[in-house]
Image (tube, rainbow, N blue to C red; front, side, top):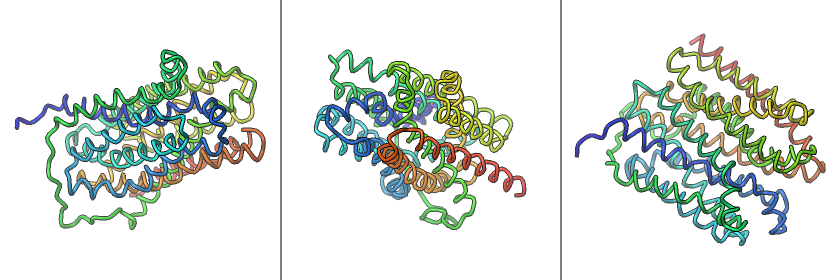
Length: 386
């Protein structure tokens, strides 16, 4: 078979990445309504966000082993098919058991795809990793933002049936499956000096994984409860949804621009520290003074949080030499990151139920943002010594 052009490979990567987030973020604008209609507690409904993230963490270590057995490209294709099935199950979302079950299947598929997509980048785009990660993270940000911005209008088109609005996202995922099914798969090999497990003995792997865990915890807690925090502060639900949509949309330029700057200037840790600091300042304002210049802090939060995520994705690519090694570093990062990230929406919902307001959990999230600053600074400091 004739080798595929890099344009085709990049297009396939973009299509896969776009479909990794709408299944999670599309719930945010509807979560209060779903909880009320199904008479569910805020802690229980947060499982629809938390369980996919937990699966994304716990199952990520299996991805390199499946790639060895089935091949990188074929495994990614099967994962995208899992995304389609999970989203289609949401047609029966008025059954709370099936709604939560779709979340588990969604998380399983994304868990296996994430590390392998990093290996795919390492294999096909070695000389352009920063630029391609920019497209990769931008595509995920586009998918995440689309899930927030478009789900309510799509639900309106279906006479207000939120299950149809959630299941709509199976259509772009099916398009991705069609493209990936046509990609040739390559057999994977393990070099003699490479291990088969995760890099548990690498101190920098632990640091990177802890940083990603902090970032993921922030993102998924905010994706679940940010709209509710604004609404509690006195803003209308439409205004609160608009602010969160602005935050997601502002993540688009940072998702692309910052990895490109890393490719060009190699200053990834300084940029990461700056994004973490911007996230921390934004959360201070949303926690304490959410109605003071809310548009500004929504924009800076989106830029900082999306930037720290896209820069985190770059880190394993510069620490490992082969596609499978990158997949292992990424699998460890996602294992720790998403396992912790799955807890923050639930714990935030529990804290809200106990405290009676969202300010208390948002104070804790601000502390996590400060920890993110410290970890980014420390990684940069140890890298300069290396």
